[in-house]
Image 1 (cartoon, rainbow, N blue to C red):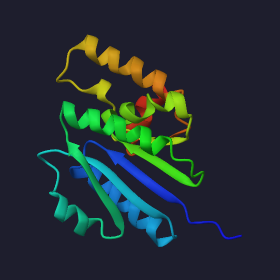
Image 2: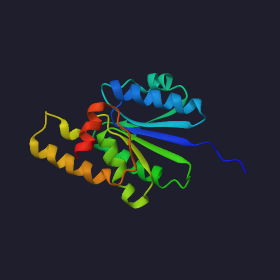
Image 3: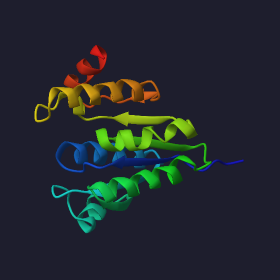
Image 4: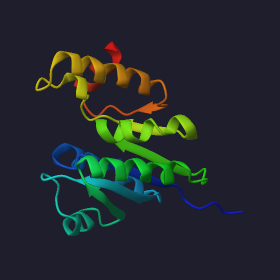
Length: 165
């Protein structure tokens, strides 16, 4: 019996700059070895538009869930249930960025699927938010990291922060 190739679905709410470059690099490498790739994203002002993304991610199915606002977060949350409830055992889910990481990892308390997470930068190190909020973000990240079998560190700085948690 022949098995279908793996499918890797990348999910992010932040698709600008380094996150875009990182996901593009990963999806291109996956495509070269026969892994089919999808990208679910929320559109932000710094994101390329949908048509440009389809060109940039030529070998990836690009799915715009909505805009990066409260309604978009809600749509991504409900999309995550469909993604996580998929019975295909050969599906890989790779979440990029803090908000998408939380949105998918919380409902995963029910589904218990292995989610690979790349924070790109932890929200709790932001200096534009107050100390109490940073502490809250850090506690959420600590809890969610216990549910995450693979945390892919995209930067040496992120790796250092993870090891201190």
